[in-house]
Length: 404
Image 1 (cartoon, rainbow, N blue to C red):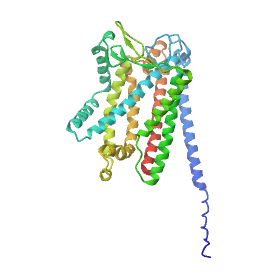
Image 2 (image 1 turned 90 degrees about the vertical axis):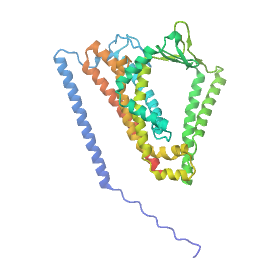
Image 3 (image 1 turned 120 degrees about the vertical axis):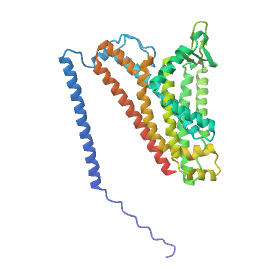
Image 4 (image 1 turned 30 degrees about the horizontal axis):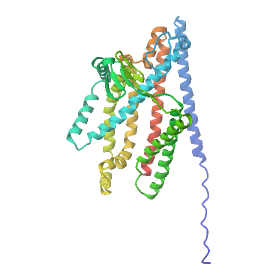
């Protein structure tokens, strides 16, 4: 009959490849055996070292971590007193290391991206300035730059009673940088909940719209709806917190007196020197990574973008950078790892990071092996976490580039 259609034959599901599954499990078993052997060898080396130290009359072991430290720490994210144990002091040092590393990573990424784009600019003056900065900064040792910034902040800035005020409520002096901070209240909690809600809505918006636009072949959406979602959800959370609890949000603004600066929050010149030195030094290398990634994009892509009528900003945002990220991210991972390890130089200016706390603990307890082992373990762990996060992002960028 003409009205009937013969059903299409359903292809049977292919049988599982038993050989491939067996090979996969055999490879995993071999990896587990190798890891177990490495773990046993490391444990034997550590146990043997500690036993030899005890046999020679030297104190060995990590039991000192629970003894009172007996020294103060000038700054930290966590509360600390001299009577608290050593493990708490190491925790404060770790927090200081993470604080300076995260701030420097964000700053060097932004500055390095701008420098890399500026070095490819058609403007001769801008291109020359970016090139001169990169060639000068990356050829001077980071330790010298750290000492230079520390001397500038501690010798050339005015005292607290004559502090500079670049913006209202912000003061810069030899004592550091003072800035306003929000007064903790329930209203700010609702604002944080609104911000998290805005992030989730923005992610859902981007996924849905990009899926539709990829299927239709149209251009990607602009970014401003995402910012509107974030700002709107945060503002809604603030309003809900103010209405329910009747207490508006407030800021603790620092004030300058005839003696010092009181109120608000402040960071020390040691922290500023480390952040500025690490950020400006690493930004020079990040700029070269960004420049190489942009140059790796084929010239035909630019010609196609011009043919579509995109201006230079749109070409950079929608054509060049999405493809350049596949080249930029792997090299950028190495720069982040180098920055995290270079943060150990903060001991040169007296910033109480993990290395500084370990040196002080070593001098008081004589546990050199244990303190060095803690430093090595922490930096290896931080490096592995950074590499894992960047590798995950690199896989997402590569997959997105193949789909686009």
